[in-house]
Length: 201
Image 1: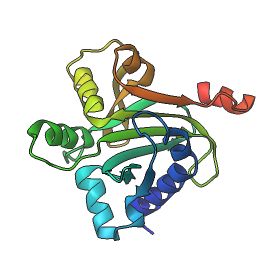
Image 2 (image 1 turned 180 degrees about the vertical axis):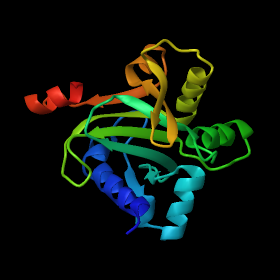
Image 3 (image 1 turned 45 degrees about the horizontal axis):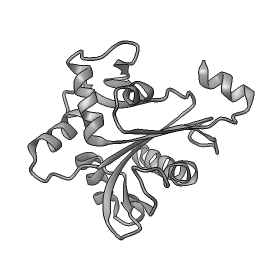
Image 4 (image 1 turned 45 degrees about the vertical axis):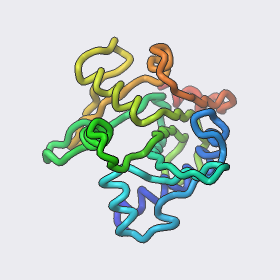
């Protein structure tokens, strides 16, 4: 199995196991069902949806409407931030560039209406607990990222972080809420002491 497929499988399994139960009744979600793309499409289409539209799952509402969702699951430390890939050393288009173009073109290009970012304890091969998760409209997230790019932010609430051969924009969830952006946040309050210390490290 390729690294891409393995990561997709791990993220989807964790999303269904601990993330979806915590967010499904939030106002931005409003109940319904979540359907990972790879569970109903072939590998080629799943790959295309991820690479070209950023859609990882379909949200089917209680009144049978459907929309795309982007999900990012990270293991280990609880950063409580959104991260969006801003640049690659290869020069390939990134998540930020694609979503910004999709939204601003007003041409009907497919992109996820909602973005979900979750942090889970332990590592991706384990059965870690959900530490925190936030939900935001993708349009609002990209607008916030553009403010970071244009330096319209107040450190340490947003900035850039380099990982490997790419640079990411990171934005603090609570800072966005303070600015009046519609962000819904779940934070687990009953973590074991050892996990709480690790999460704050």
